[in-house]
Image (cartoon, rainbow, N blue to C red; front, side, top):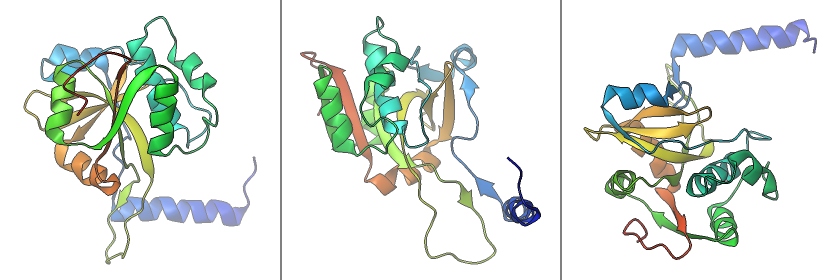
Length: 207
C-alpha cells in the first residue's frame, strides 16, 4: 500500500516523538521457555500452547483456548480458538466465564492477589488475568489520563524470588514482567482473575 508524503511525515514524527520522550510496552519481548527453565530462577507452568488470533481484539478467546488445551492435551489450542463464536471481538470477563463452563470447565471470576497467583503457579495451574498492555509514554508535561488497552493473558510462571511474573506467549515463549509493573497494570481491572479447572476437580486455587 502506497502512503502519501503527508502520511509518511506524520508517521515519522510519531516515531521520533516516542523515541525522544521514552516509551515502554509490557509485552514487547518474550523469552524461550527452555531458557527460563534452564536458568533455575523460575517456576514455569510448561507447555501452554498460545494460538494465533484473527484480530487484535481476540486476546480473551486466545487466552481461554490456551488454558483449555493445556488441560486437554488431546486438543489443539488453534482448533479450540477457532470453535469460539465472536473470537475476533473483545471479550468481557463474564463471556469467558460462560464459554469456559460451556466447554465443560469450572470457572470463577475474582479479584485476584499476588499470593493467590503464586499458589496456583506452585500447583502447576495457569490463570487468566486482565491488565493494561498499552505502552507507557514519558512526556515532558503532565497528562490527565494514561493510555488504556485492556488485554487478557495467561499467567504461566513466577520467579523464585517472587519479583517477576511470566505471561504465556506463542511458540513456547513467555513475557517476563516485573511485579511492580504487572500489579500496577493489573490494578486497572480491579485485579480481574479467572481461575479455570476441569469439571469436578477440586482445588484450593478456586476460592
